[in-house]
Length: 325
Image (cartoon, rainbow, N blue to C red; front, side, top):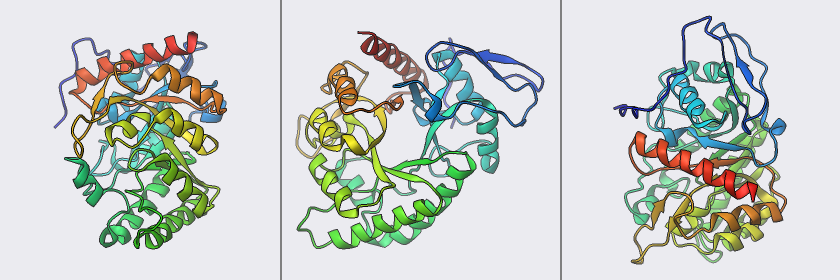
């Protein structure tokens, strides 16, 4: 069910023939949205963005259509988003199969796509360990099929990056590790055949284990989507140190804040940027120290739509302050 919009939400979508402009990701030169619905639109690519451009994860805003996403981005003063692939099970789009065309015509600068698998259960750390990513051998074939679908959608969106949770990585001496690595290598090969970089999201394993896994796989198109809060939510180490270990392979970033769990085996607490234990200012500096220049995409996964809009707006302002000083 679609959630109610906040009272200060500003609708920007209009009928065919309605022209509008919004500032670019840094508040600079405006860009014009096409006046003819569905028209082909030349738009900036992620590589054309300024360093450390600010954006938002589409699913954080709980939107159901590209027009709704565009309206929220206008309200937030950015035009950069990582976009959910969208299927009936995860962050679906009202446009259905026409979503890529609508997204490409919208003028939104998309940094990459995100895939969530049907059946992933985040109720507890234990349930997501059992159901997440490619961790369960029984679901690997169907999830590789879902990956094939997502890769095609990523291509249709005109993008070269797809992010997902690989699943809990087995430790080096675990008997399931060879089979898991074989599956991840197959996923990487499928992505390579489509010209796509596949980025595994951090958090469900230590940075040391992810570093070793990437080295073992030795695939140039397998990279990292770095989420510092996940490392705290799962209690998996120091995110600042993790940036140092994973720096050369950080392809994209979700900026999110959290506190560690107070009870072992339970979730930590996600909080607005600057209110947790990540130390966002140090995190941004650590990214710059390892040479990361890609977008900083704010993610918020707690609260209703109005709460998320408020917290994302706060997060963007907080990041602007971090970058200014």
